[in-house]
Figure 1 (cartoon, helix red, strand yellow):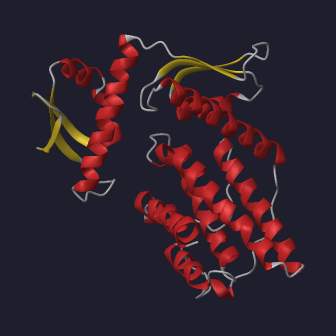
Figure 2: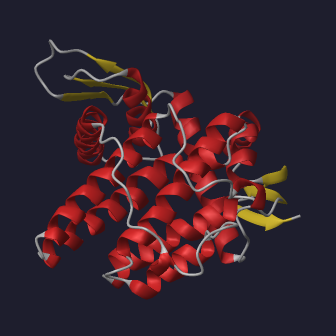
Length: 298
């Protein structure tokens, strides 16, 4: 429980606090949003409140807590992971929608877990307090059940299942997830918004739906020089991010770095400089030829 529930929830709070400015604290109510991830996590939260409330009314405490653990797993391992770039997005509307939705869900989750994890609930609530809040989470009202959009929940379940199948195909072929592939085709019907999630999660340049194909998932695994170069750029981004962690840098710290490595990487670094700088939060990116990949603070 400590690792799979409490630690995950507190990690979401920490991520939120890292990227949300004081001005983003805003109101405590749910926000109007059109992003499918926000719609889904709100539907999942209300679904969890309903299930937990029903079990508590019947004094079935084991059934009351199980949906909470499942929800926090969804919040951390799907919603936050797929929304990370939205928190840093140049699209102000999308960024504010992600931040506001996360704030609302975290505050309401603190109220939901209060009877079961009273000290963790108090910690989460204290991190997201706004003017006019009661002194303690234990003085707030029980969360209300909003609209449970079953269609969105079902579409997202299908999306995640297809992602698992596609990633299994990649694994069988021995292709790392950081290496982009040209195309993935699904025997399914999903709205466009969900296809974009699959595209990012599977790391494919194109996603298609063909209900006539025999297999549920097929991948075009032919790797062109362009795709291989993009894969190398993703690998370099991973190394920079790992390096940042080892240096104890905050995600918001902007730095300048020099990357040294094989000459064959020089063109890749130049071609993908904008993406590398953005993903690594770099103010400047310089190149020096070397025998192995090294990253140094300028």
